[in-house]
Image (tube, rainbow, N blue to C red; front, side, top):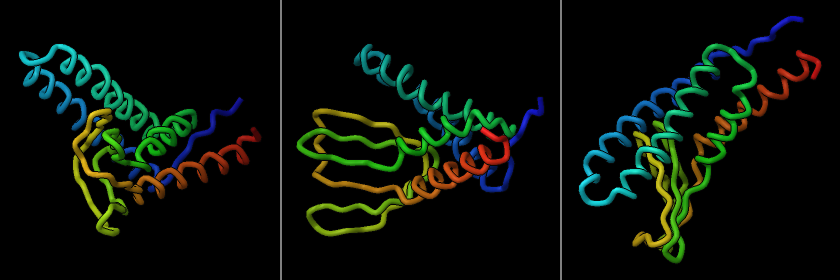
Length: 159
């Protein structure tokens, strides 16, 4: 049985964003946990195990994509799907991105394009942020690119 591999410059770029963004996320989660440990053990736990865990998983899947392992595409697609939408409404908020975010942000004042470098994972039920919705254009492109790669791989592999 032949082991098929995935390849392409686009996949290398996507894996770089997952690996580099995940590494920043792991570093931030450890630094954040150390900084807030004396204030809140629960917040430190959340920083290390939730944010750090998702960031470490992004590194792991990014490495598997870089190596050309097709089973990693599913998880890469899920990680980018998690980055497509960000919002704040009635105190609830959610945002997640690894390394880069190019977003169309709509709020009460209109629509703008926003960019962010770095890694962020934030979910809250008592957020002071004003209401907005953001759509990460880069994450949409990465997600669609991965889906196309999955479809093409299944055609080639006969699955």
